[in-house]
Image (tube, rainbow, N blue to C red; front, side):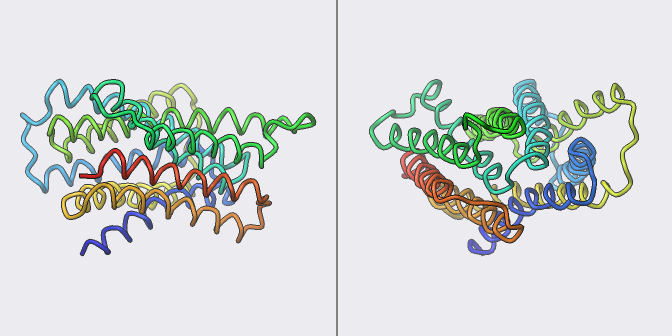
Length: 288
């Protein structure tokens, strides 16, 4: 059963990213995909909360506050990531986006007294080096760089930073022993409300073709998060996180290869270094 959970997490995470690629080729805008995804995920979250008999008392001020932070960060992060995939390299975008695991580790050091030793520092430096190498491989810093590459760099760094908020939210929910299903529903719902406000300001109809991609992405996202929670009950986090973060990065690079996106040697080196950094941080932070 443990292997099945790991497999479903990897498939869920990779599917969300791949659907961003497919929807772009299908002419679906990044906003439409994100809007439908969070709308559908909110509905899923609501029914999962009902099915698991989540009491009203579970929705405390603390949980709602954490969910609001995670929902706002998550909604914007997914939107910006989807935008990045549309203007830049898919595999590189996915690799940097998934490396946001770095952010809750730094948060733990700053606020939860986690130990900042040689291994932790080395892991942080590896991930930062990976981001530089991957971006360099995509010519984001070249003297004759195309404006699109520089725009891609700023957008994917923005997605990287914003996606750290839901990861911090998961850390706080776990640390405070709050109800996970209530958190999932609230965080998706807050993200949807934010996107709904943007939708009303935007005054453009969501294209019908976005429904299929968005609903599939919502299902994949929820399955990934749910199976992560279940996997952590059966296996050490030091096993779960390296596998479920590293495997989607490598699969993303394989998808880029399939679409014949240019991958330089320095890009591969950056990806491998980043995976090494994620593994070091996971083992150091969560090893028992």
